[in-house]
Image: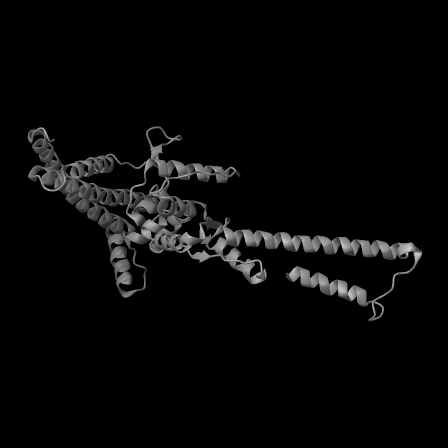
Amino acid sequence: YAEGGDRLDAAAEKVEGLVEALWAQHKADNARAAAAIREVLALACSCGAGEEAERSSNTFALHQFTGRAPVVWFELLVAFLIAENGQDAVMRLNPFLDADEAQSVLDLTAAALLVVNRVGALAYALGNAQDLLKLLRQLQAGEGDSGALHSGMVLKAESTAGALACTHHYIKASEEEEGALEYDPRFLLFEFTCNIMLRFPQVRLVHKFYDAFMGGGSMCHQLIMGAGKTTVVAPLLALLLGDGATCVFQVVPQALLHVSRDVMRERFSSLIVKPVYTFTFDRSDTVTEELYLKLVKAKESRAVVISHPTALKSFMLKFVEIVDQLDAYSIRLREDKEGKKKGGMFGFKLPTWAGGKGDGEKLEQIDTEALKQQ
């Protein structure tokens, strides 16, 4: 670029055309997304065709207006995409829909969601293209340090190209039906909620972790800074693994506990709602039934429990300590019983407790109950 301005002018002209094209596409997709949402809501509130259906539709609309029937909104239909009984939920909201029509509502919701996500991707690409054009204009005018501007322009050009080439990496060809595509709606909903486009390394890594867990194995992977460990990979894994039968723990360094908890609560506070709890424990603490019930509640409510290594290690050592106490007491109890059976050490009868006959058995019962509570 330092040799002449012709190439710089040509590059600026191309980027300017790119910005205009992105603006036009962004405007068109906005209109398309609004139309798709209206179509989805109209289908979700429809009552079929014909004069009788029109009368039922007017009655149903009147009931919705007066509050006697539930009103459907787009975000609710989006949440139904990952519900276990989403189709039944749509039919309960509108009893005039059959199973096929309810499934069509969910399919159109997913299609509208793809358009909405592309609007966000276009906005991101447009921002990068505008920043690139601004750097090119500064180079044309000879403003600032040309070396720094050139380096920034190269980075921004790579970012713009990556934004233009992004795609949905979780959509793949169906293995059951030729020519069809299949996808996991949880990935689609996560993109919509966070207003991001999942990168291929992120999708691949999440699938690896998920497959390893479902296969009964474990996995360790190292990621560099900025790869999305806290903001993408961990929340997405919590969404996939939190099924009501698994208690999801996120263990982070103690210095990052508050940051990780805030990010997790931000991710699961709108459409996808999950409780986020903090687990702290010290070896001096007592393990109570209340703590156990809290963890059971976290598992059943598909919550995310955030902790740090020190708390988990203390909890593990507390478990080992209790097991050792129970083991030692079991050995002592067995030795006492064997001694009584043989008549005592060296053939003499062992002395009873000072409290009288039967107090030793009472003490055993008290100690056993205390250890069980601990």
